[in-house]
Length: 212
Image (cartoon, rainbow, N blue to C red; front, side, top):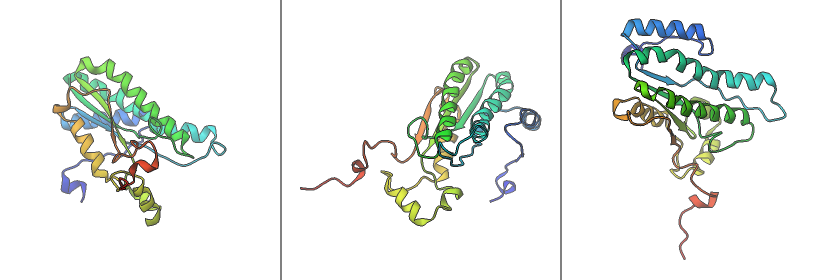
């Protein structure tokens, strides 16, 4: 399905470049008469162990995952404050705030930082009629994950109480709700979408009940 078929309008930009963000937001606001909804969804997750990490890898992770969130939120606020209405949804992760994973300590740190940012921001902008919330995906069947192979995916799914990996639409549906007027009394919150992945105390907790 193409952008033309869905009525979508696309812009290409580097979300770490404030001037590009500012220019694109101005164009969008002029074309559509304002900006009421922002979904901050940019992110990278290259693996690196503690021994492999260096300043460049750490800073790149935070630049794209965390600083870009700050930039796009700050640049969109004037448009939302003008209308005294806005919905901001940040795609973050269960990694960092709820779980950890070897090789992704820098990723987890960048995502936990996003969540700290959105909670503080929520207190500052609530009086302007603007909400800001986060969606926290678990293991979602993206193209990048598919590349790991069927055996890896099957093993991963067995560790999730729902016994399946998430569909990207699971995340989209949650973000869509948080972007509605009906979600106007929800702000500073993080919604976990993981099929129950973080709930078990141990792997045995998701096994079928034992029958005597």
